[in-house]
Length: 76
Image 1 (cartoon, rainbow, N blue to C red):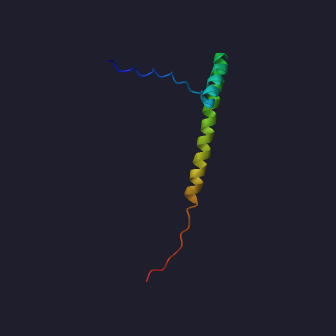
Image 2 (tube, rainbow, N blue to C red):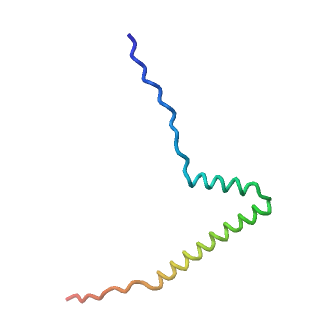
Image 3 (cartoon, rainbow, N blue to C red):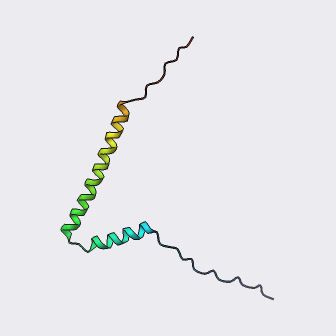
């Protein structure tokens, strides 16, 4: 006698990620624009990232300047 074959697994289906779908839609929208518009959007992304970098640099500088004052402990 032959052994019974296991039932084939049903293909897995996954719910699409909301963020991934939103990015795909945005990408589709911007890909329809002209080359000049695409260049402006690219430049705006770069400027946004530069602004974030500036904020981070300023925060690092502030934290570096105002080091925490420690408590003095006398040692005998």
